[in-house]
Amino acid sequence: MSDQTDKAELLRTLHVPGAPLVLPNAWDVGSARAVADAGFPVVATASNAISAALGYADGEGALSEEMMFVAQRIASSVDVPVTVDAEAGYGLTPEELVELLRGIGVVGCNIEDSDHVNGGLVDADVRATYIAQMRAAAGRIGLPLVINARIDSFSPSSPLAGNQQCADAVSRAAAYWSAGADCVFPIGAGLDDLRAIVAEAGAPVNAGLPLNGGSMDELRAIGVARVSVGPQLYRSALDHLHTDLQRLLALCG
Image: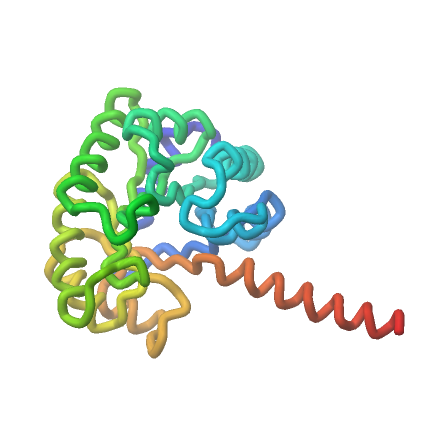
């Protein structure tokens, strides 16, 4: 499959509530090819893992040019659709971001609402407007970009606590869905919160794994449409590397 539009449409159709698209997130060409070779229909990137592999902190600590170079190499190395973690947009306008994504050959993106400059969360209306402008820009160039709006109400960067988090996430999910997002991702939400968001927001919902106290069967029962592994595979690979290095060191002793 080579046509960007076809790949975008395929990615969108794979978001099925109750039969979620599972995304093992890659961080380089080798891991992306492993995901595709294993039979997964889509490759997603993890900004946390790519940043760490490049030697930067997460949360837009890396230059967008470096992050997107890795994403471009991944997209050109596999035949399946690729969706990229675009963090909070790297300070680009919606039009600039969409053009960049088209240019590197990806068909979807995460866009989050953490404010990496001022701290806290971007105002929901401001982020909804950004998403609406992304959707309009994608429409003008004929790319049905699949936008996954990450909601950080439950994240450490959020100033909210307790019941405020779920109420804020539901409100943001509805706003982003109305603005043109294809899926919403309340990262860090527990099962009860996910259940409320699925029931009230009206949008396909992305959950993360591992989920404390949760299982894939429970996520299916709730009606989740997408599941992301995030940087867990990268961390697992590093754990294996450290183990092998200790064994090698022991042989040298």
